Length: 289
Image (cartoon, rainbow, N blue to C red; front, side, top):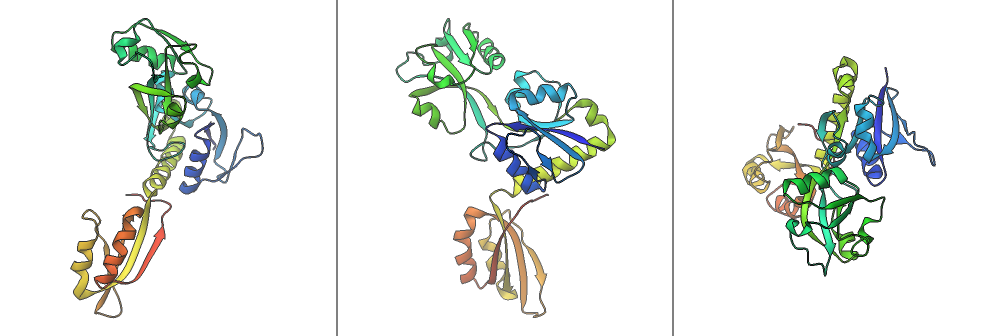
């Protein structure tokens, strides 16, 4: 059997393919091709704009796909959300859709948008946001380059941002947040009810989650005198319980644990001074609890 998988083309493409690679699924993409070849014969993939993924998955054109929560909501798609994956184009944090205005604008709050014109790609989300605040404004669809439209063409924009740098570069300031969004692994409802397809999607979900969990973490193992075990363990973060194994020399044990990579540089010298030796740091592809 084949699982038809829809992957996001555009800003999320490289980060998504890198995540799948760490999860063990490698895709080869020919120049200008929308059909990546997977090293898994049970997967048939296609690259589609993230804005359209949820709709195609809902319609059953694809069994599963990956797109942002924002586009699921914008399309009002009736799908199964299998996994929340917190990563973005540049980092491992969510993106935000925000209301932004020129730095010199008199607009300070959402109420100040009353009667104003707003440009955005997410018309439905923006209208719902305004309705929640009891504000009436004109919302128009933006085909791109939304940041440059204020103040000459519109009074405000609703735009997605990860760091806010693009908005600042265009001399815009954030007034309010409309939505925080993360990528989601989603499934067609009929496909989810199919035993084989559901198991395949669940396997992909498990491995993607493991790859994401491993991001920024490393393995650490070392040898330690039995007499120094507690002293060494006290150096490790409180929530990290190491695995302790006996060695052929009864006076020594082996310790192994997982740590945040940024913690290791401070911890290794302390471990060495406490008596640990043979300390090895190694990268992780997946961590599955």
